[in-house]
Each structure stands twice: as structure tokens, then as C-alpha cells.
Image (tube, rainbow over all chains, first blue to last red; front, side, top):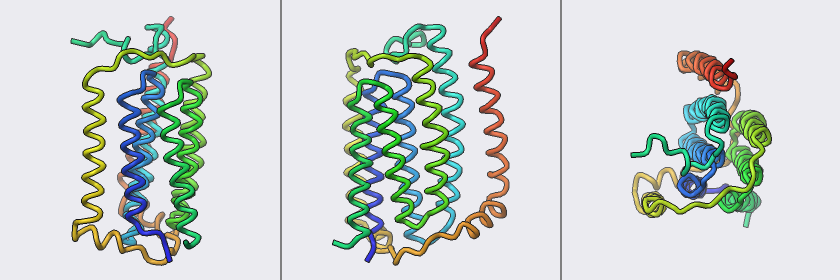
Length: 101
Length: 167
């Protein structure tokens, strides 16, 4: 007796949906970044679940690459956040609107 | 109820609760801590799926390194409560889109004949061997693996160039 793979996929979809909601509704740049990380985690769960369903290792390799890219993205993104704080005094995404039409 | 199912539901609920907390919390630190909760719960689910190496990497790299970076920056910038401003009308469009996406995935899972193989494909859990994984990583995926090292190098240089104080 095991857990059906579909349960993992549904959980992954729910987490991804919550990540999208957080991305749209959070005002702080750092929490917006964190919701991107949440979405990446949800996708990773789907990758591992499919790897289990088809008994293939390629899904796990992809998870590995996703984690590497997420780490690189976090490093650059947080450097940008520090720059933003230094130059703009506010981290609210609504107030960073120089490029807004 | 069998034990794997109980473990799955416990940690799935923990992950969803952490994600909801991330949205509701007004302190950025609370959001970061609830995201760490989500990642730890997901690591346990990876163990349940038999992906031991990925579970370890998830805890060490994600919950360890990346989230420490987040918490450190939050501390460094001394953030207070998140201020609430008016939402753009398009934000609600995004929520509607997200729910349509969820319904679409649910429909595919439970009605498509192609999904039936996936849904019923769970065999008794046999751990993915790390030896096999590393063989795949260092043979078939050798070039992408080397490319990621350049990606990391560029990310480090970019972070340094951005965060350096101009004289």
C-alpha cells in the first residue's frame, strides 16, 4: 500500500496556486521573492512525483538543476533588494514604479 | 488508513499551512520561517517518494543555505511590518487564473486516460539509488552540469558587483 502519485500532483498544484496568490498579493519585495521560491518547490514536488510514477531518474536530475538555478537567483535577487533599499528607501513593490507607464 | 498515507496527509497539511502562513503573515521574518516549514515538509515527502538524495539537498541547500540568505537579508535591512496599499485590479485576475489552472490540473488528473497510468503508477516504494543518479548526472547530463557551475560563478560575480558600495 502506497500513496497514489496523483495525491502528490494535487498537493503540488495547490502549493503552486498559493505561490501565485502570494506573488500577486504580497507588497514586500522579499516576500515576493519567497513566493517565487514556493512555486519552484511546488514544481520540484511534481518532478519527483513523475520520476516515481515512471521510475525514471531524469526527473530527479531536473530537480537538482532547478535547485541550483533557484540558489543563483536568490543570490542575485537579494543583491538587487539591497541595492533597492540603498537607493529608494522603500521595499514596497508599489513604490518602485520608475518604469511604470 | 495505512502509515504512508497518514504521513503523507500530515506533511501535506503542514506544507499547505506553511504556504497560507506565508501569505497571511505581515512580518517578513514570519513569512521566511513558514517557507522553511514548507521546505522541511516537502523534504519529508521526498523521503516518502524514495528520493533520498533530493531530500538531503532540499534540506541542506534550500532550507539551509538559501533561506539563511533570506533571513540574513531581512535582518540586515531591518524590515518592519509590510505596509498595505491598494491592489491593482489585475491582481484579482491573477487569482481567477490560478484557480482555473488548479481546476484544469484536477480535471486532467481524474478524467484523462493518459493520466490513469500516472495516477495508478505508484509501485511499492523502492528508494532511487544515488549511485544511479550520479551516473546519469555525470554522463548524460554532464554538459548541463558543467554549465551550472558557470551559472553559479556568474551569479556570485553579479551579486558582488551589485552589492558593492560605490566610492
